[in-house]
Image (tube, rainbow, N blue to C red; front, side, top):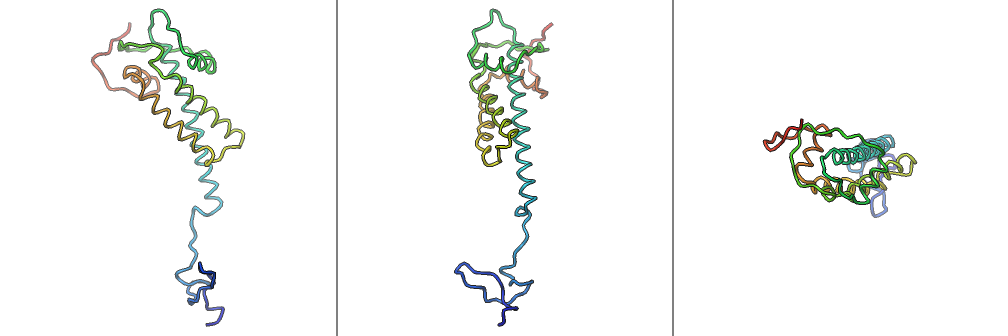
Length: 188
């Protein structure tokens, strides 16, 4: 067989393939197939999409922490409880928040530990770090993935650790309608 009719692929053992060419300069087995994910533009587009998703989720997580603080500040208390340092840190970082008083309020026992403020602060700090890395151009999908996964996990843990009435109030603040409950009390 002459060189023009022989497949140009090099096999794993280092020898040239001895099959006849069928498509261009390759046999049917070694014909390179164009893959969308191998193109430079596809790789860049995929990376940009991932980074954009990280930015959106990080921004939403900061807004979520802000809503948690706002809901907490809207709760009717007697004398204000002494709050943990993580709560004070968040209030200082977020600035003044003017909470909306809830339309409905279901009485429940509440105190400084009703919200895991350490997790809320972790969500805030991780989100800020993600956004800072994106803004500085130092973050890639690969380097930010562990922080992103941690953010998702900790956010879920924060919600799961909250008491149900507090969760409902938070859902109302972020625009999700909770199911109606007969134990709610209208506030005048």
